[in-house]
Image 1 (tube, rainbow, N blue to C red):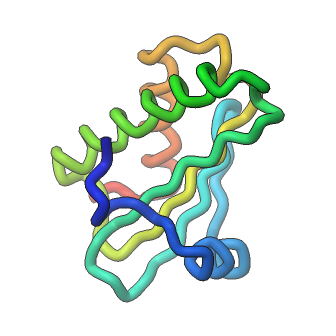
Image 2 (image 1 turned 90 degrees about the vertical axis):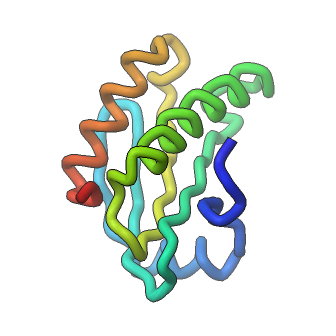
Image 3 (image 1 turned 30 degrees about the horizontal axis):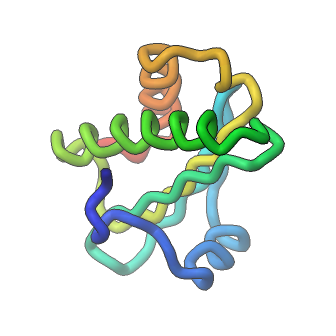
Length: 115
């Protein structure tokens, strides 16, 4: 579970992200990030019902992504002052944790949001 300091929750932050955020794409994810004035890096994970109608499947994917992000935060690898939203794509359903982790780390490097 991510600490509440690292969770992106407010509607205004999502709206700002939609207007000013930069996008990076991969086969499994769309990543949108924005440099902000706050000191903490905050994350949100969005999994649509289009991915799977079953909440169990969506929650499992969300837990896996949160764990990958939590470990990266613990290792202090992210730059400061970022808001990041991770959108998933339909191909993620059949993937294992190791494949999701590899793809997400690749996306972080591609976006240049790591220290």
